[in-house]
Figure (cartoon, rainbow, N blue to C red):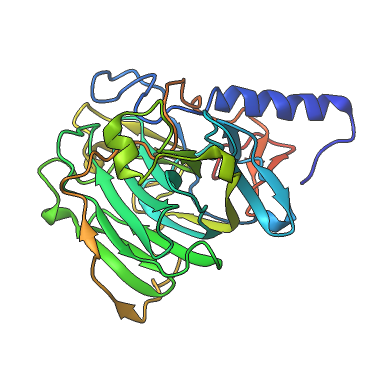
Length: 342
């Protein structure tokens, strides 16, 4: 990380993070929904690839919320010890199609949920969720435009020993399909033309990961049942550990904005770049096998948003002039004005 030794530089960085973050517990709320307004602020774009090794510490490109993630030689831990804990990291950038690779151990415990969530301002969503009551599977899911009346989209897919060893999970998301892999095994493919009408996720997404208690007694009976709770906090604490995350934006530019209120990917504008301008930037998706779902979630009351609950403001529209993100997930002060992703 390249900073001046003057106190001003540290204070400025703190201001940047505060400006871009806000409270981080929002999951099904957006401060400005582009489906309802043409004046929503643009989203800061990643526009490239970052590869973050959390065994070496945190990243300036994520803000914490819902609790305090902790760092050690294994990586970053998200610990649920009591009611209300939902520690997570939220990206200060968005991707417009792309790939996320996360190497992690899921948290154990009945009712405890480990989550990786993509979510847009118009509430498109792609999820991976690991239920602590079962170390053999991962739930994959998607939602579009905040429509949650149908719960037949989720699947429980094989992910053996996910609490006992670090496994790399990949979500590769394009305009045509979304592929979920566990290790090098494809566990699910969602083709855009097979999604429910107007439900295929296709708008700029923030990335969030962390853990929470679906089995908390304050949750609805349906959520507690889905998470295989209730949660017994006396047997905790319960921790999800993330070793590494690699994120590639398949589009380029500094900011993404909505050209109309359709919520379609063709309406998205990339300032200083192009949508799909970096397709293939992560290289070929490496797979060696394909497996099928263990079961569906057709009868489950699946909560939207993945991590915790509540509402908050989203991040603001861009980094201030003179700041740029580095490939290892840091913010760096530059001599000339640069936007995110430049």
